[in-house]
Image 1 (cartoon, rainbow, N blue to C red):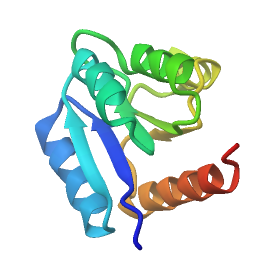
Image 2: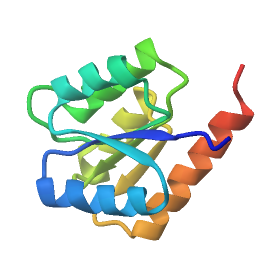
Image 3: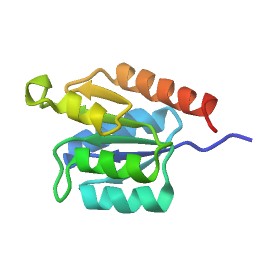
Length: 129
């Protein structure tokens, strides 16, 4: 039996969201989308994804707020934070302090995204309590 892996992608730029969907669906992942932080939190509660990918700058609630919510309520869900803000804003440090498992700076290579997704899913699978 093949296990379905659910990935929630939170991104308010629709073109970027389509790119994420194309990359991840091509690999066989089931992809859910949210375009703001409030929708993301609702979907986290509803589907409890196997992995969360979130941008930092989002309407209503930031990606950092989504990260914090997810880790406080579902600590087993790995999180990749993606941002174009860079280290000068302290974004990387904030993301990791809130529980992010990985950080990718925009622009990114699609193969790098897939490698990091795969790595986190393997780690999650081997460390289930």
